[in-house]
Image 1 (spheres, rainbow, N blue to C red):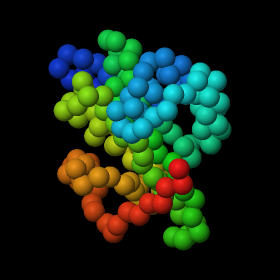
Image 2: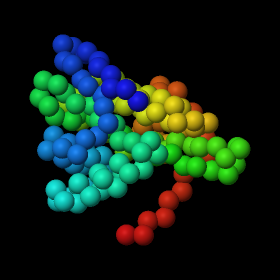
Image 3: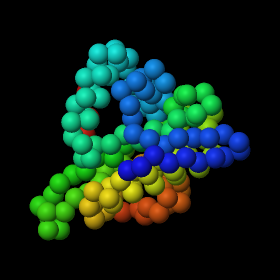
Image 4: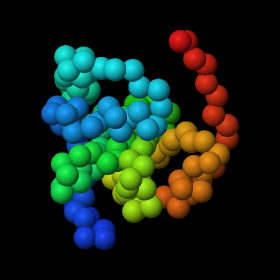
Length: 157
């Protein structure tokens, strides 16, 4: 997946894959706007980054960096599930979409979702799926998703 640039209201945003130095650009603080996010040491971040990097195209984290401030203002991830059904097909699972509160309304979330969906398509996925709250349903419909079935969860912690 190539990097892409987008200009909105005079600002230039860069969409790219997560880099090992992005912890210093506000990556963890950005995730805290999405959900509970415990502190992560530099070593823990680097170890997890290297683990995810070892999966190649099967796990990709996308970020949007504001070139004027060098801060991350949006992120999301996709992982590729390899299946036996559909001729040993693949499904992309989009997760952890968040746009910084100061940058919402600029279509950056849609840009992240489309970037991740394009990545899933380029790896041969026959579909891409995600879970979302009822509050976010309209946003994902604008990104081309449709409601299907019910999400269930069982937490262990």
